[in-house]
Length: 565
Image (cartoon, rainbow, N blue to C red; front, side, top):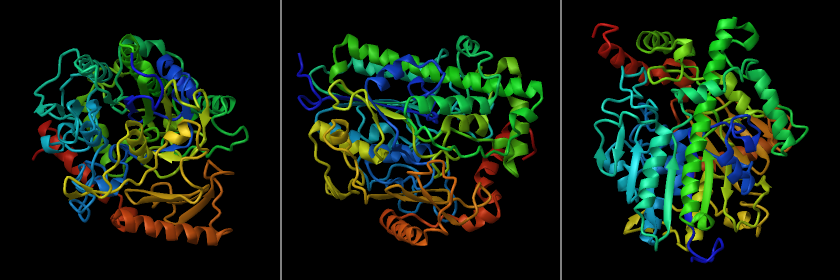
């Protein structure tokens, strides 16, 4: 029988990542979606209200696996979001580069069995796949997203559905998926197979990054029907209910003032009854996806318990960014083409939503029901985009059952796992090559109840993606959102202790604080190699950002014979 206790033996690690999950989607975080397995872990663990990601998927995953900034690790923009002037520059390779060492590589060298099953999004070749970055066994979706079923119909307008599918097992790309494949089920099943084949005498690091609930929204029909009628009052009512639950659970302050919803789409009361029914159905499908993900987490937790390793396993759960608020059909130039393409190639009738041949998302108003009281959603450096739902569970945690409000980031996970395993990070040299040192700090003393904070009060860190920027030190945060994407192309200043909704811009009242933060911003960009993203052109002409989308859309449309070559 192994020794009990967090440090008494080399604990196993189960790292679970949800894709675009909203802060209040889980029951333990105020949501109405049925998530009993995640709720049990969260309530008996430490719920982390101050945990931060990057604004979007692949940058977060780069930071999570390396402990350094994504601009250093090779994902300066999204894996598929490369543009002239940045593509190929150091830190903007579009895959995990050789300047970083991953937690999987270090733990494997230390004797851990390393395995992953799920979304990778850090490179699309065998040389940049999980098998080449420290995982003994892996089953991975290499791309940003795909159909959650095995359906291989027409390529979608953003070429997220590749043919053959963008899946790889170890070093072998798959020609097709099993006919009964559904992403959350398939990822959990494959991980359980890896766990069954493990050496019981050695600890394991298991990485389970789901692709749910990222769009396109797909879920089993019986679960969708379970939520029928649940969202018929619209996203504003859901937002109010979620916020009240967050207050009741003490996950936010009782007097918090939420930021107003920001969206191009029509408000609920301006929709026709048919449009309301359609919108509500998208949220029903989303909820079913989340419940199915929870079911599969339960399968893995039950395996841990059956094999008597549950009490020796640290489980860390997080979302990779804030809720997804995309309205692709609202893009100024590409939107009409995307809408036409989807209408002609997918069956998006109300009764078919959520099935394999549908292609839908739920939009910014439902997303901001999940990010309340914060501002905006995924892809923004505002509080709706970077603080994410997260919790840690281990029976020996000193803060078990508590809600932890300390500031932390995904970069703090690798140093924590290394400390747990008794492994030193190599610093700046690994196997005779230069690598980036850790920028994060171990969360372990905080989770054990031995420290009141993860970072010192003067700790500062920044965020940048697609020209959207932020820098934070303590409770002060400066935000820059370029126009036309819900900003004014000026730095804004917020006191998050008093204004977590980022409503009251204090830049004019406290110019000294803003200037000090901008000095820290300059230090951050110097240290991480942030390039001046083509923000001036992006701000003046949104089509620059949409150019890669348009190129891929045109290619897909030609294949579908929608337009002549």
